[in-house]
Each structure stands twice: as C-alpha cells, then as structure tokens.
Image 1: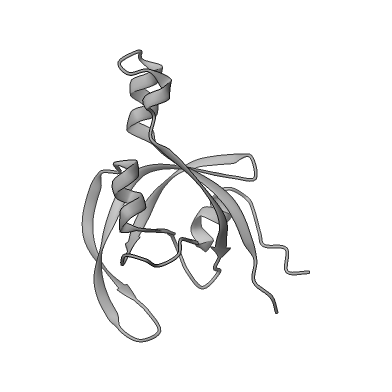
Image 2 (image 1 turned 90 degrees about the vertical axis):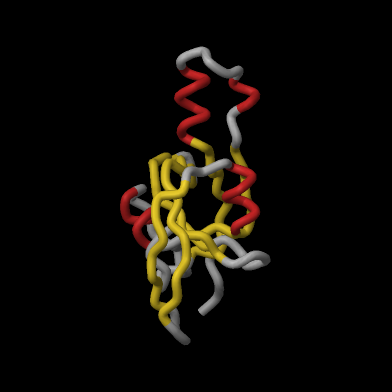
Length: 120
C-alpha cells in the first residue's frame, strides 16, 4: 500500500476573529499552507512541528501523554487551529511534534471533516 498525502491550511482562529471584528487587518492573520502532509489513520489528531505551531501563534492548552509505538511520552497540546482540507474547514486541537518531524493529519480531523483517504 502506498502513502496518502494532501495539502492542508492551518490558520490561527484568534487572529481570524480579531480580523473579523476589525482589530487587525486580514493580512496579519497567521496561516500556513503545507503540501504533502501524510494522512495517517494510525494517528488521532492534527500533529505539527513546534516551529510551525510557534509561527502560527497557537495558544497552549495543556501537557498530555501520548502513546507511540515505542513509548508513552509527554508532549504539548495546542488549541484554536482552523484546519482546511479539500475545501472543508473545522476547528481542531493540535499536538506538538518534536522539531524537524513532518506534519501528520490524523483520523479525528478526517472524520469530523467527513473525509477519508483514497487508498486506490
């Protein structure tokens, strides 16, 4: 079986609301478009590297434990990310990946956006 990748856009929801209310210009909304993001049905959440989360200015929510194939480890959870995939859009939490790792699109955002990977 091959890999499934997609293009996603992640936007800071707070910035978007501030722009909607006229407090900041729309050009100041922090947003990133990322190509070739791995669609990983073994992953639950949207996962982004720490540098992208910092660039987006997403607010910290809490420290959590995540179970990987190798171990259980602590990482940080961020909130108020607007995710756009294939024209569908929703608000999601985001798990921080250690620096240098590639972004992952997990099953919860896929299900909530009513998307599924095309494995053919």
